Image 1 (cartoon, helix red, strand yellow):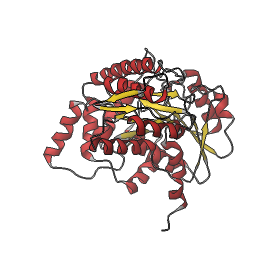
Image 2 (spheres, rainbow, N blue to C red):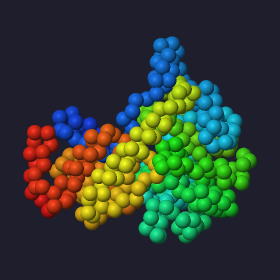
Image 3 (cartoon, rainbow, N blue to C red):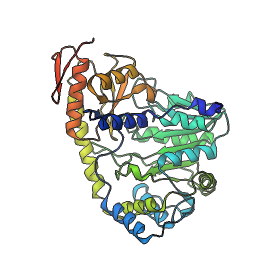
Length: 405
């Protein structure tokens, strides 16, 4: 069978594969614990459900504008004004089927073949393949000081004549790191000086801990006209626990949004009207659910960190936000894929190997599930890896005996 070079270069999303694997194991009745997930267990806001149900009941389910329905654009404008202190026009907004599509369409709109996109590593698993799908070249940048907090020097060293954009994801998936205002300021200045696009992936910007705050990129932007090359990405998936609704958006200059909307119009037309109505309900409805989720996640993070500290060989950088802890397990196994497979095969705990995020020897562990899953999952992992643990472990009525080193 003949397939394109681009298709051959793209690998499946590791996180989506894990979700599929977890579903298969659960269908079989296996007591799997999924510590690799990226969606909260809390329910979608009732305001979102009521708005969607109301529109469904009307029976008036039609095509939507490629760039989003007016009601949702209006809600996004208000949301952006409240959270970023910047007011935009409807022509500055494009609604997509998830923040992922908004990023993908932005890359399609700005990239020519062989142009480069820089992003700090560890990075979200999809960035490299999204760039490749546009025939661009992904350029991950690992901080030279060994931390999860890049410096502007790390970025500057990788900029060349083909650099077209920089993607910044803060709070970061997979590390949970919030990049400093100084770093964001330096990146903005660098992009404005070199005429480079800056894509700010802010999907976790309100899920932060320890009284910290995400950095508002517009506090540092000098170019506020319609020539601005800042592209702000957000959506309802994470903070509103609406992952399955697949509604995200991009905020950018009017000309770029027009081009992006043209591209999206040929790809998917517009996002589902029912799901957009749900997003309107979430954005305009009661907002207390976000703080409740944030507090739950902060507590879950603290429990996971305490559990991981019982390992002699695990090194942890405490996450500033998101759902994730990116822990260094290289003392046990430097091949993170091998380690992840061992954990699911031996103790049925799913984790995401660090190599998928550009850093081997690490595992991404999610604490957006229940406390029982966190504590039992880490207990199983410790039994599988720590030879000082008792030789036997019970999972339900099933007794496991550690017969490997």
